[in-house]
Length: 117
Image (cartoon, rainbow, N blue to C red; front, side, top):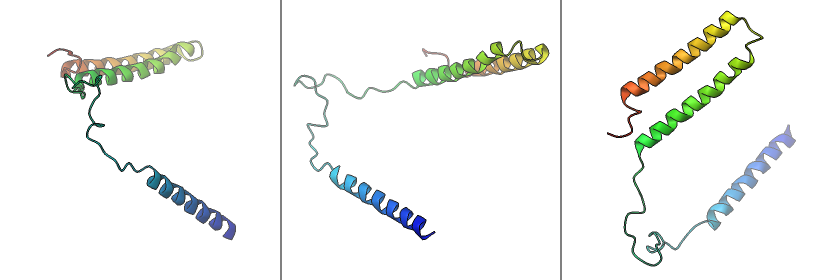
């Protein structure tokens, strides 16, 4: 019992020491205004380097990822066709696809799929 508490204490001390050393060594003391500006071959930039992010694009990407994951959930249905009861297989597949279609209809109805406004 004493050995395990000693090992835990030693581990905590070593990890705290490593974190302290990394914190002290990674400090950037010199901040220069010129280093924070975008560089375009020595000329002043024509536009902003920070372009606004399209929230529409992000929503479309998230919807794509959700449907992509759901397609991978549908793939095992084809593999278990010969193993399970046909009626339960049809009910499960139909119910899953119905949920997908209702979600797609909801996204379409809310206007999340309209790219240009």
